Length: 408
Image 1 (spheres, one colour):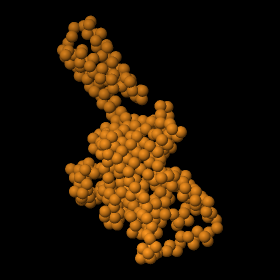
Image 2 (tube, rainbow, N blue to C red; image 1 turned 90 degrees about the vertical axis):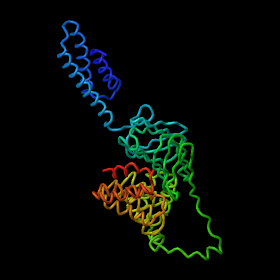
Image 3 (tube, rainbow, N blue to C red; image 1 turned 30 degrees about the vertical axis):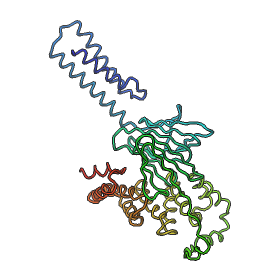
């Protein structure tokens, strides 16, 4: 291949990187134009003057460096530009906005990394956070068909919050069917695998290609009359129902309303209704699951203090219960993600592990504890947590982070 062909190849590569990108910046376009102009002028002048090997080498080096710089700049810009997502074919999405597919419509949500979520059958989601290698999506209802692109092996991390469950994406193509009113969930995987945790699951469950998971939260049957006599009565809560009766300003209608909204999966509306009905009073009468739902609403839509209040009430009113352990884990997440109080977050994750040693969030608690210790500057603690995590969950979703910590 002669020098002219080499220069043309360089120009072609630059053209392929930038020419068809509608979002390319003006500076990159000017760089591209200047390079191509130099290539063209080099081709013209070579016809009219004798070729000098020294001059030719200098020109080749100059153009190669310029082209390499432009290509590297283009690649860096394409990899580091803020990720975005589009709803349908016309509308750019914004974090926190409701995206739904009413009236039998099918609505695609396309992400700039190539991932897609297709909503159907009343699907309703909110994209809570998004960066170049991770996303967090709240699935409020309906069917969501996902195809996730893993641009960087073992580092891409997507999480979908579905009611009381969390779906961690380790595969690429799967389907979620969630009916908030019935609290039913079905997860089916076509390519790769996903990890489902929380809710009624005793431990995180991996759903591989060709498999499906449909956890059941059916309540246990009430004991018979003769059996009920043997069951010790639950301790009374002196500040629950009596306080509600003594406060005439808290009407039954708003209370029923927030319960209905939470049961339907409308967390934001349920939170606002609870606030109108006196949030403190609601926390004194809500069930464990309702308090967890209110906490999720506070985490996702704010203010976070509502989530902390609901979780604190849950731990005070139902100490020692599995949901109290879940509350400790969630308080750890709030301390980590919202407050950046990593030492406090580590304490809460350890609390969960102590209270629920066989709980469904144990793997996540180990992983989060490892991250919290690392961010708090506790390198030795982070390494210890990483070693424990790999011994117990060698193929878990935090395994790449654990190996990275141990490799340093």
